[in-house]
Amino acid sequence: MNDDFNGLVAATQATLTRIAGDFSPAVFASSLAAEDMVLTDLILRGKLAIKIFSLETGRLHAETLGMLDRIRETYGYEVSLYRPEPAAVDAYVSQNGLNAFYDSVDMRKECCRIRKVEPLNRALAGNKAWITGQRRAQSTTRAALDIEEQDEAHGMTKFNPLADWSEEDVWHYIRSNNVPYNPLHDKGYPSIGCEPCTRAIQPGEDVRAGRWWWENPESKECGLHVVDGKLIRIKSATQTTPA
Ligand code: SF4
Image 1 (cartoon, helix red, strand yellow):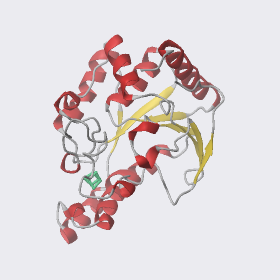
Image 2 (cartoon, rainbow, N blue to C red; image 1 turned 30 degrees about the vertical axis):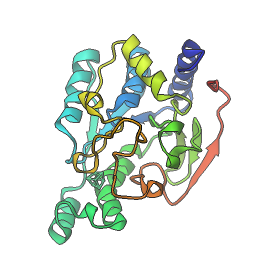
Image 3 (cartoon, rainbow, N blue to C red; image 1 turned 180 degrees about the vertical axis):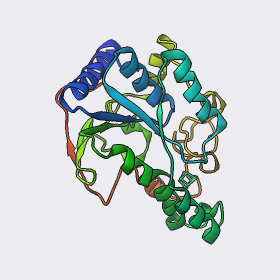
Image 4 (cartoon, rainbow, N blue to C red; image 1 turned 120 degrees about the horizontal axis):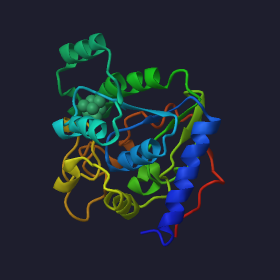
């Protein structure tokens, strides 16, 4: 865990406050997983003017959907949901089958495009900045992650306020602040996506080993965070780097 955990939290709060003040309107794309619950807690307890939304792909676990109720009960907040276009889902399923994403990386990315990327584009439209719960240590595809980036594809700034956080930092925050979390995390799921594309992992496996486990690590992103490679990285001066 970070030697200066309180300083790490304070720096993250400062980043979120700066986003709410300088990048309004800003939105937070929550997957409802542990990292995103840390940010949800910081945003809602800090009463920051940042809208929280989630992509309801139609293939999420019941436990993940249950987090919407937990957030409502705990914070009195209604997470906005963005769903895929029904006609696009129907066309994909009728042409390829319900679970064609197992057949190839291209078929998987097309399913993610329909169920995640297109709804994300709708959710981001009209905003100045968006926020994610990504951490640098999560996978090889996120090793170069910065706290602040210029997302040219969406024409806005993208913030990853937990980029410097370790998994231990996340769980220390959750337990110290009694933050609700997805019960799947206690069943071997450190990273949670759609139900058919996520499995539990064994001790010692990479935290994202259970996501699209049939693919190479280099291809394991859903298109939400890399769009045509158009990401310019900007190192934020407002957050400390943990030990
Ligand atoms: S994670 Fe799986 S089910 Fe969900 S959108 Fe991507 S391919 Fe489709």
